[in-house]
Amino acid sequence: MKRTKVVFIVVTSILCSLLLLSACSKNKDEFNFIFSYGVYNKNELNTFTNKYTKDLVNDGTVTTKLTLTKEEKEKIFNCMTEIRIKDYQGINHGLEFEPESGYSLEIQLKEEGIKVIWKGGFKDEQKDENFKKLTTLIQGIIESHDEYKKLPNANGGYL
Image (cartoon, rainbow, N blue to C red; front, side, top):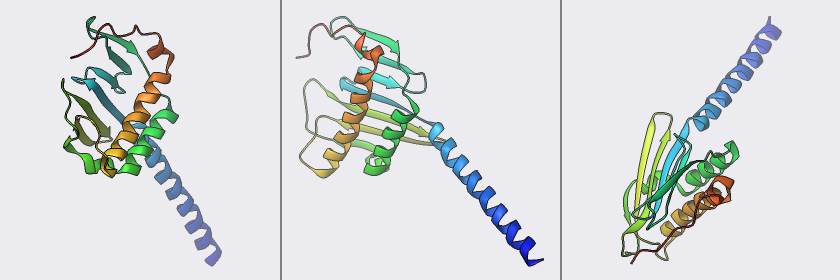
């Protein structure tokens, strides 16, 4: 009888662990975001629609299909966790620039939503450096995609 109880407890524990791992994996699968950046935040990656919009300045904008890999999304998710992205929720003021530039990040993880707005550039402070690490990571991933590389160069500039 005792052996049956032990086997039951072990099997139940294994099943619970598998369900928990499955739920955690599902949460990451339900992780999406919209990342806008640059002057007037005209550059935008939208992982809900798998589209990227690039600001071409004088030539308007152009949109292409751009899908992040599971590994890329996981890197971004891990970076957000590492810098405690919830601490950035709301409006953050960095160095002021003219014309207006900065970052906007709308994150959806299962039913939880987080919105971060970063106005301007980065100061020499830890909070700024951490957020810069995230934005640099996302922009690097975007720019590594062939879809991005095929887009035309911007024509002109902002004053």
